[in-house]
Picture 1 (cartoon, rainbow, N blue to C red):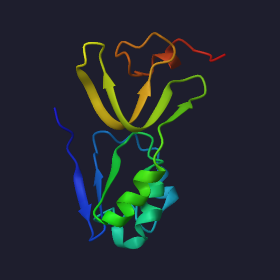
Picture 2: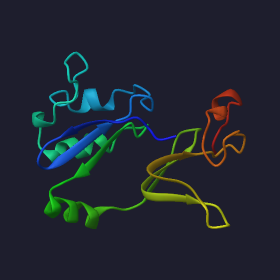
Picture 3: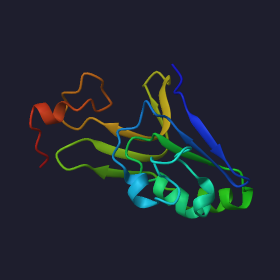
Length: 143
């Protein structure tokens, strides 16, 4: 099933938001209130900052509910050169993997494409390879 996304567009960037994916960590609201303001409608105002500031905040979105697509080809090329895959060990939790990613089975079948995944590190998830939060229930402690 495809995610429902609301899109906000300027001549340089498209910002999309998937309300069903959002975990309400408020990184966006705290990070750039001139763009992300839940007391206004629409709550995303992409004219409120330049695209590099917007991108920086979107990349901190822990759930991936916020995404961006660049229309400005020059900026798109600059950002592509800077991209790296990043793996973060969450304290006593999952691996947060960020980048241009594909989860692929040994058979070659793609399980999921995306830009951010939380992968199980405790070994007890019922949704492997993805984290389902079981690490909290079993009080997983990373070494």
